[in-house]
Image (cartoon, rainbow, N blue to C red; front, side, top):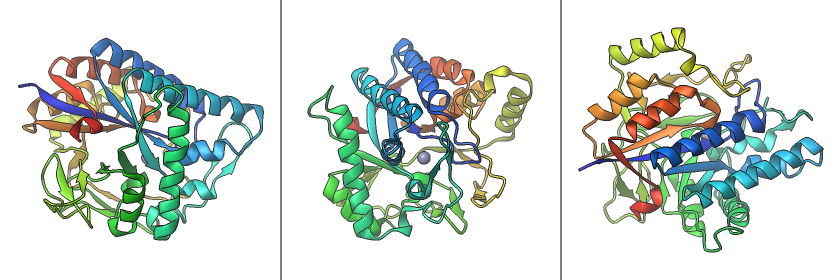
Length: 326
Ligand SMILES: [Zn+2]
């Protein structure tokens, strides 16, 4: 039986010193991905950072008006091609400042995590996010319903703060966790070192604790052990191949290091196709014993190599979306 994969893409700008432009960071790389999905018969899910759309919509300059239209058109195009749009929230947008030239300044990260808000504020955000995305999508699919969520910066804990928001929006699936990965700094926190080692499990009040009777479904981003072979091949590709050159025009890097994320990967890494060599992407997929693999990628991290990786991987797998799990 063919291995199943879920390809997930967080659709968002960069949060480093340069946000990147909508065209180079989102529109162009996503169009290249969509063409590859078509060719390789793959289905993907895009977690759209709705606050980006909301704040872009508040600007009246020509640049922003065009960017907003391009994003809305692309979201509809994604749905019409049979892919999925789901909800993603990066709440530090509430403190973002527009630079006036199609880029943003995020010098304040005090609201980086959802848990810096109250339960009611989070619930309002979920409702607003679903309304904004639905109003864009329902022009082309009148019954469209968002069913899944991914927290910005993976900050899904404590879930008790988000439960009401899930219930109010009828979102039943979360895909923010990843086995073996944790992080803690002054703006962000998550700890997935002890989540169930399963491809899918149910939960009720805490994403890290399985509850077979639970109302919600956790679909962790798959992670794998980073053998030295993978590290070497990635390093060689990065150094000697143009395939791993970043296409977009923003940066993850922050000079202030305000958001310095001390990632404790324990030598584990999330499955992806953009930040690793084709050898790593293909070998980690083929060698995994899991029946269902969940990848996390970002259009902003797009490299030409990802198209080759997707093309090869597609020959061995069948892709599904989160909605197919319901
Ligand atoms: Zn994100």
